[in-house]
Image 1 (spheres, rainbow, N blue to C red):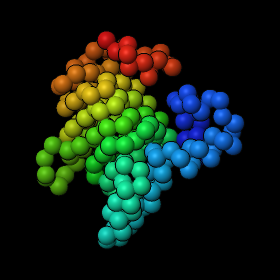
Image 2 (image 1 turned 180 degrees about the vertical axis):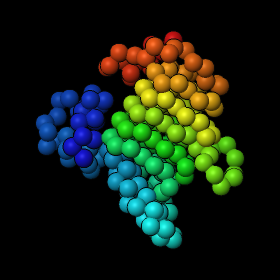
Image 3 (image 1 turned 90 degrees about the vertical axis):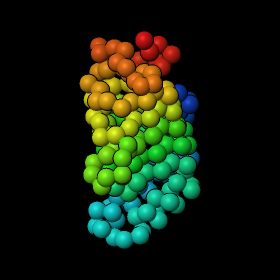
Image 4 (image 1 turned 30 degrees about the vertical axis):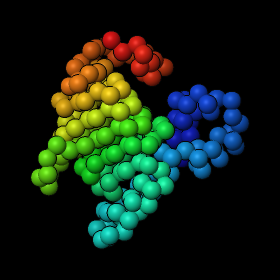
Length: 187
């Protein structure tokens, strides 16, 4: 939890003027992404135990409470930040690495109904802009940036910046630390 709070301090400018106790209280009690992740951890644990009904019930409660839908089967690494959160959908076979940042309206979805791996695998340190759709059993490499409202339907190599419908690679040189949020400068 401490590393997650540090991640919020890093990526949320509103937290910079808060004391540590204020930050802790706000992040734990008022940030929907944190609530959704805590409830997802419970649902995922029950899902792994093959408990019927209750994992999905916890997921439904989480969606009602936060506006964020995470299937209990999804695998999520540490320090995921879901900023603003409303409208985020993470499918059953999606996998998300460590230290990622997802904005509101993002979908990690499937493109068919076959009961196999059908959702994306997201690497570490990936930033996915608001409204982006990442669809199918594809791999998004480490340190990628996906521009707002992009539709990604193909694998994306590490250190890439992609944008558009369908998304195209705009750069493969990566970005300097601290510049990963500069969506107004995606070229």
